Length: 438
Image (cartoon, rainbow, N blue to C red; front, side):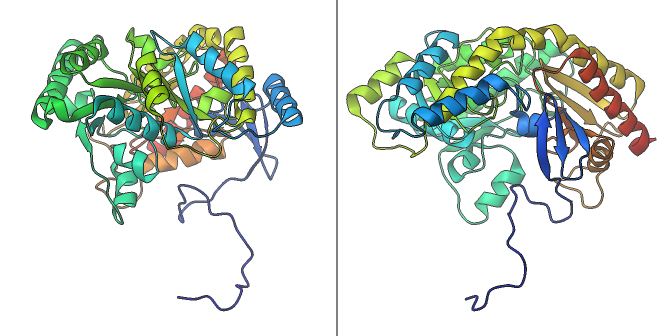
């Protein structure tokens, strides 16, 4: 079809994750942990916009670093060297666990995960990558094929599919029929090994997984689960890639979420929090062997804006901010979220489970009589009370995240939030639960 005449309709932005059945808030200003819409209404930003505004919305040091770099040189080809880029690579090596030392910069988390998978396949000479059901690793065709979230994959795969991936179940009670942490860890790890053996260990390049779930609900692995995953990867010569796009840069109380499991991965992917979301930046942190492979063999792949100097300047300033009390703030105030959500779980029978780590938490809702979600958007039509809850809280001045699937709410406030602000968010969630469910 050819459009021969200009439409009378005004030009418009097409938003991401567009929903024709809901209104889109226009955010025009931010300060600290608050944002403001074009009507002047204030919102406590309990989702850090898209789980990325870790340093809040007005960090002067990051803004100054951006301005200084723009005034020096705003762009350097990603095929050339840049002092600010090399500085950030060195600082990432300093804060990364184990022997992770070499960084390949990218633009977004999707592209970082795609590059990590490409490096893993090149290094191992194997093609298959295992990821969890209910995971989210990006929305491009490559990263979308790695994503276990069915809504994302369905949107992409209605037109094209990619190969070389397989799924395994996440370590959650619903998947294995047990609430006992020790049994859950054993069953989930045994299941992963079963999948590996049936797929063929020699065909598998890597396991890509979030250490603490992001948009899929902030669930954590039971104790010793990730250590067993690490052991399984070592036994079968499979690389372990930790997707730290959300979990990294203090979100879970350490520089990287996998450190809360006392496990060292073979690669880390990062984005979002590396700059506090002030400008886009992402990448892969790899061990020397993978860096040596690229140095010796070369790689005819790249991205124009990978490792953008302005992003790297923001990243260096953000690391200073994280080291100057922000991560300690998460560690100190994690109990406010943990205990406050435990109180909600005890008080309201519709709160099926609250779980998380650091400043990344999920609250799952279910019918107390059946234990099943009130509405599962993957299988049910009609109204979803969790959508109503999110809308009610937003009307009352607090923005929460919608989990994948929306049987849950995700709490992911900026890492600078203090105890009073955290309690305000929990109180708003409680008020919303009262309004929607009772």
